[in-house]
Length: 281
Image (cartoon, rainbow, N blue to C red; front, side, top):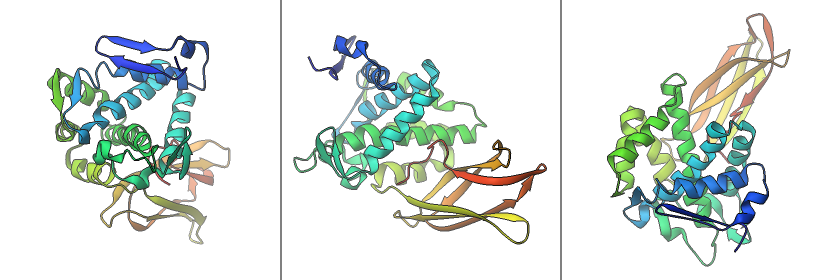
């Protein structure tokens, strides 16, 4: 049996014993948790059509990552997973020995149609990793709305209870998410689930002559109506975080400013998207 083999069947998780004999920066813990998560995502609730397969694989993949963060309290491993997802989503080339063009192959909504002999790695890159990253961004937006409270877990609980032992559609999940995301719901899923594009975000900061810090963010490669929160971390000259901001950015040029001195501390640098909460090229 291959070291990386796993299969989550109803009531049974089949794993190679070899995966318990090593640890690759949380990857093996995540691999096992992914298969366990299929007891909920794939079996308790199952995808109704090929377009909804991300509800099985994407939800299982993100649930496994949350196990690292919340179950094992391993933020370092969680951040590593986000970096690896991003690399596999935006890359062109080989992924696990299979060619992939990443997000360029199409949207999450395409489901099994992403499988191709010419680029066989695309299905995994999008249905597993981009779908999981989309769920991470959903959790991030919900935490912003709720002042840090993790209503994402409440969303998953509601979804699982409402649709237990039923086949579910993407529309079912969006309807459940809408109870928590409210007016952002249509925009969020339009640009991350139904659209195939991933933004290229160019960012820089500078000191102005009038005592302010200018933050310049240019968004490219997405639709004209693209709109997303974008986190920024402000670092003082003592190398400590002195402020955190979340800017709403749109396609094209975005310009923000803040005082060059905050609470008596001079700004030394600005970190953009420091915890990889927004997917970007």
